[in-house]
Amino acid sequence: MPTSSFNKEFTLNTNKAVESFERIISTPKKSIKIDRNLLSSETIKRGEQKVKQMLSRNVTSEK
Image: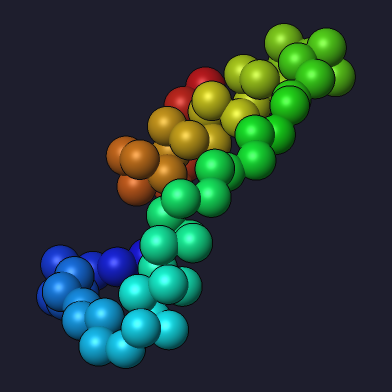
């Protein structure tokens, strides 16, 4: 994961680099189908709780 000091500038200085970059940005990403029927409401709530804890940087659970 890039930090605030991550340099986002780059140079494509060869034809091979340009062709590779064009191929990467022009190739559509394959979508992944998620079967939501496999998830229970309890699993979803548990996942939401973990995300909330990570975002708030709270170590203790909110019960």
